[in-house]
Length: 340
Ligand code: NAD
Ligand code: UFG
Image 1 (tube, rainbow, N blue to C red):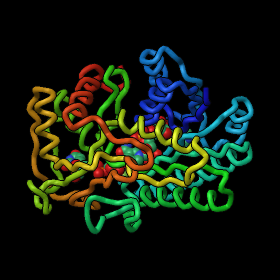
Image 2 (image 1 turned 90 degrees about the horizontal axis):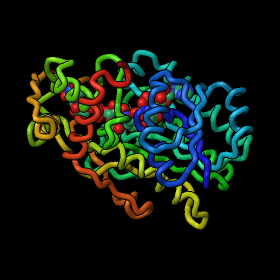
Image 3 (image 1 turned 45 degrees about the vertical axis):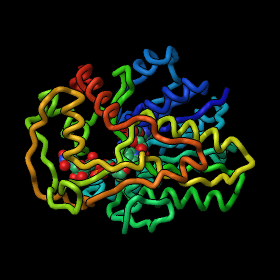
């Protein structure tokens, strides 16, 4: 049985990945500073899996605490989720984003190197492509982020590529996520944004449950089938399974061990397509109003998923119906997220 250090493991994607790691027979050691997550997630993971993961409330920038953890546990690999992730906030507070995401990652990687831990899976984002010249997006498209959050992801990718070049005993998986939505089918874990949600799906879910009056649809004049923005939404459980597959791939030493892949479904849905699918799944009417475009948004973004299928033998199984169904299940069971 292998032991995986999961940074940011109580967050939205991290918690779903810990569940799938446990299902696959791994032991998880979670490190999270709880800056954007609740300790209750630990109980929920235990309720789902029957196993309580080892947890440390710790910042990845805390050198001493991290060293102690790495001495205490025999870690075979790391999945590194811990990061700040709000695009708008990163424009307002770039230094905080570069400090937490970039400096924090460098500190973590230094500790991993010191402890001879050489398998690293990293949460990157489709945001590194910026505004793509065409869709679907392939991994070799130009990389040109448009905000500090995106730059922080690209910088960490580069640090990992250089680390691999310096010592190809490292095994590195860079996973570029498209738009994760949905929740575990139990409704026990899901996305719990603080304050007003920035992202489409949690906003729609809060309208459906009566916490918000209507959805503002940002732009209806894009060159898309209904004028609203198109994205590649992926079920968070599919995404979590992509991490487990990546660990399996990297553990096979005979292959190329610097992997960069898109994790998406390869299908794009517009804002209005998602509204319609959510209405169908929930039986609720989602009121919306058209608003001007949101600054920095692009018309369409969806993945070419061939590389992930070819290298990892992984593809997303869930469709938009299941994504909406599971979001609704989570939202109705936890109308205020993890807060009572
Ligand atoms: P999240 O905020 O729910 O999870 C991140 C977790 O990391 C939180 O629990 C937070 O408390 C923790 N954390 C942050 N900084 C830390 C630090 N310095 N030390 C220790 N813990 C820290 O976010 P998420 O949606 O689960 O995203 C996980 C990863 O995936 C992030 O790296 C994010 O940038 C990336 N990503 C997310 C999306 C998305 O749309 N959700 C898309 C692409 C990439
Ligand atoms: N949208 C609305 N109203 C809202 C929120 C969003 O109309 O209240 C629209 C957006 O304009 C866009 C689509 O819904 O067309 C999706 O927007 P999200 O904010 O949900 O997602 P983004 O594609 O803008 O960005 C997300 C994450 C980024 C990540 C990116 C790619 O927020 O961190 O996906 O992975 F980089």
